[in-house]
Amino acid sequence: MTKLSLSKATLMVMAALAMPAMSLAQEGATCLGFERALVLAASNDPSVRVARSNRDRAAADLQEARSLRRPQLSTFTRLGVGDTGLIDSQIENQIGLRASQRIIDFGDSRLAKEAAREDVAAQESLILDARASASLDAGLAYIDWLEARDQLIATEDRIGYFSRRLEAINSLLATGGATRLERAEVAAEKANAESLQFEFEFRRDQAATRLAIATGDRALPCTVENYAVPPSQDNLVSGVLDQMVGDAIEDNPEIEALRRTRASLDATARREARGRLPVIDVVGIASYASQDFDGNFDLQTRLGVNVSVPLFTGNALVAQRRRASAQAARASGELAAAQRALRQSIEVTWRRTLLLQAQSVSRADIRRFKQEEFKAAEIEYEQGLRTLPALTDIRLELEDAALSEIRSRFDLEREQLRLKALTGEISNVSDHTVADKSSEVF
Image 1 (cartoon, rainbow, N blue to C red):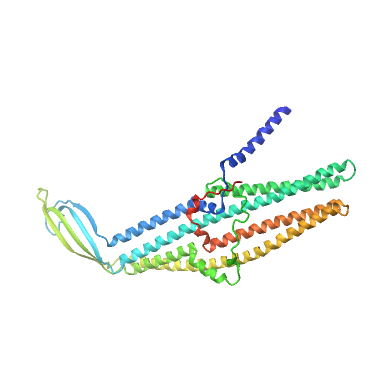
Image 2 (image 1 turned 45 degrees about the vertical axis):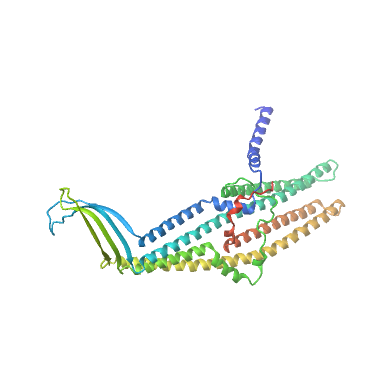
């Protein structure tokens, strides 16, 4: 391959690699705000659609339970042949209507409706829980993107510094003002910084992919939002933990769903316990009947009371009652376990948030002190009071402090977001923000 063709191939590859970034920049005229990302993710997640379908199923069960105390109307036809009499199983030839109305069932229909209503409420809470989980995942991806962006900025600054230092050393090599060892050390640090740059670019692109899939929007996060989750100082004050846990147990959608499920299963268990009580219906029948196929049909009407009482079912009623009681007991245990787990998660997240808040302030101070130290060391190097390796070590300590400060700052934001999800605050993001377009451009 000639030099010309090789150069063309290189340019074509570079252009192909640049196209996705260019098209992404063109597609997203505005950036994606944090709260808008949460709302879009909550509306776009498939688990939310699954939860809504479960809610619709529960609503259908409630509609069915309500029909137990409503009039029932059906049509029927009977055909039969044979001799008349009591022992020949002869069936009159009939066509007619049957109407019935349940009047007394000793709580059967009431408990059926109660169980169905609680199930609908449980599924509504699970919709909120699915929305909160989707919002949390999108929020974490958003924060990861912001963190990778800040890490890239710090790394690019590091690359720029060592690039300038390498140019200066190359100029000094010709006059003997620098050694090849110094040049190799600086070149190695520059290459190391470039390697970190590739890693942070991958993390940024990975977060952007997660966010785009979660929200269905390819716009990038707003770069001016350095703090996606502002610290909630009220929740970080000592002494509010118990109140926060109590409120979370009341507001957390997963806990509410378990509470409603337990109530539904309790109602079902009480309904099954009444399985041997009678059900009394008023029944009316109007039909045209004939004893044979001579075509002479007479109108016949019947009105009466139908009393249905199960006597022997082969222990089926006992089994149904035991199963319903066991399911209700299991739901009660699951609720207690979830409440305990939620309390533990909130306490651990809350204490970690306090730690990260203090750590973030401390590491910001360390970064500032390292910046001052480096400036002083750079002056001393220019005056010949420090060697280049010593200056390089101080610069690397500054870079480590910068990356450490960025990491602790965004770790704090992640814990803040998780705390909001645990306490139910993230479920309160309203749908009207979907229509809000961010005017900030990147």
